[in-house]
Length: 84
Image: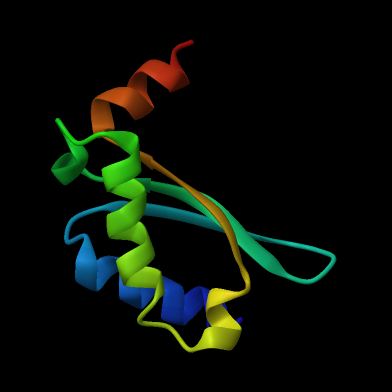
């Protein structure tokens, strides 16, 4: 469970006020989820992923390897997906 805690801490530090939703999947215990943040507004998906990568790279290499995928969404994008 340490990966969940350290990943949340890294994401909160880099993306203040973001909604962070993470889940751990077996086998291997890899972590996936979504990061919903107003700061992604007007940023291309590749730029969002680069920002995310910078935050994840602050974790120890072993923890970095446990991160599978994290969707990066604005609150508006998240709402439209929820109502789709």
